[in-house]
Amino acid sequence: MNNRSSSQTSLRDRFPELGEMRGRYAEAFIGNRRDEVKAYLLIAALISLYGFGLYYVGFTPMMLINGFGKFGIVVKAMMPPDPGSWDNAIVFMRGVIETLAMAFFGTICAAFLALPFGFLAARNIVSNSIIHHAVRRFLDIIRGIDTLIWALIWVGVVGLGPFAGVLAIITSDFGAFGKLFSEAIEAADQKPVEGIVASGGSRLESIRFGIIPQILPVLLGQVLYFFESNTRTTTIIGIVGAGGIGLYLTETIRTYLWEETSFIIMLVLVTVAAIDFISSKLRVAIIGSRPV
Image 1 (cartoon, rainbow, N blue to C red):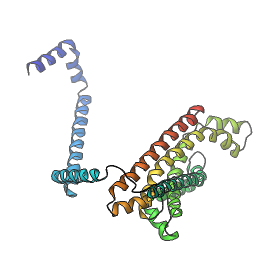
Image 2 (image 1 turned 30 degrees about the horizontal axis):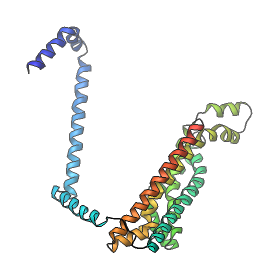
Image 3 (image 1 turned 180 degrees about the vertical axis):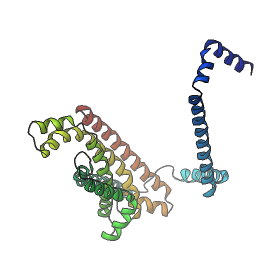
């Protein structure tokens, strides 16, 4: 308390005009205190809401402790990773290759299909508000459905197999790419476009030579990131019968073949790490070599 009072006294001595300012601008100081009270009340409300959420889902500390104990037993059963036989290892590697193919073709097809919709959803390209909002809401609906749900839908339509997985990735990424592409187009500098139009160029030429060179590195970087992400996603949708390594992962978990499960997980982790390394190098090369 002595230290606090001495510090307050020293502040008054060093800034004698502080009291005068408080009296002259009392409303400003009151406003700051009100903002602080509102911030504390908001934090308290969020903490209370979080606590109620834990209570609502039935969370208890003992549940977490017991869960960690069981998880440790499963991890111990997974060691060491073992495919069981050389034939199984080949089958699992083929599953990983199938997963990569699904992620690659799904991502590329979704990007090409979403590009024209990205232009239609951009305000600086389409001035008609009806078309603009209609395309935006259409993209929101498509990307509002998770990839796993699309996989279940396409499995019911075309049957089991990797083709359903590719269609699920195309459908899900189509909406996401459309939104991201439209935002990149809207963020493009309009000065090159205005210069091309002023020099007699058409609207199509202004898009081709004024906007696309600016956004192309950004779009390529987004496509590379989605390919990396879809490699993990394809593993999940394989669980519902959409092909890939997920089918084998589900089977090994269901039959409690934990060593084979850990071998598959290790393959997926190595594959994702390799793709992450390669795509990061490509993103630096693409974005770093051209102006964004």
